[in-house]
Image (cartoon, rainbow, N blue to C red):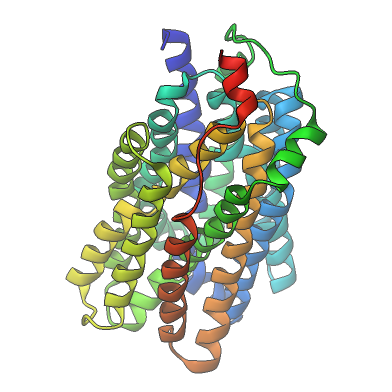
Length: 398
């Protein structure tokens, strides 16, 4: 890879670090916002669920726009909308205002200012045999942000309160358009441009069994990470874990996912990606089953963060690389955007059902059991996927 390509990767990493890192800190706001606005955990969970749904439903169209007009414009528009939503959240005094700001507007902004568009820009220029590794580096960035931002957000909450913390978050997101300048050359790599039409791309994806299985499996990924990201601090608090340990447990998920995303990114360039995904989902299921068995303390909370972190978003470089490997990169942002929509539908269910079940049963046990069962299902879904490139790509390569 040339220095120019590496610089594009660096700018993409920084964008995802900020945008994704902030998004994964919203769980620490559940208790203070719920108490201040006098709303239940179900309402806050529903807000995050709407955020995930808006993010997911917008993703295919946003991905298509990025494929057509370039990542730069899409990222700038998304970042400004993201910042507006965060600022409006700081002024919210009712559940409806919170739903519009932190839910709908932030969700729409995230669809343009985080990983899918960045992966699409980078994926068009990196060599095929390095794509999984580079995607792993980009995804690891959101986890680096998570490690630093989640404990930082907890500290800011203690000093400034949740409203001023959201104002600071909005100011940080405004820097993303400057970083997006580094991605303006995503179509200048010298590779021959595909003449494939959008209609043909959609037909290929719709009739490919593996694409459907990937989308269904990614639903489970979204269910897992959003349930945990939204409700884990509150779950640990209910079990007597200190606020500091709970925040650091969430942060450790981010830190250890740096290693996980990198390791699985490297492995994905050498071994079957779908088999690696099967192992990740099975590992998640086993780990979450332990939550129902092992006594919860500060130590076990931190241990859970480390173990879950290694498996956290390691699914993304593998899943996205399979999409690019099978279908090519001409409409990658749009095609992966559809898969990401499945992820975000799972996120909706994970965030909302977590609060719904807790408010009605006083416990998260049923959610952990559902997460375990879905992990087993996802492992089985990935096993039969055929990840070989389509015949037309082999013809083009020849």
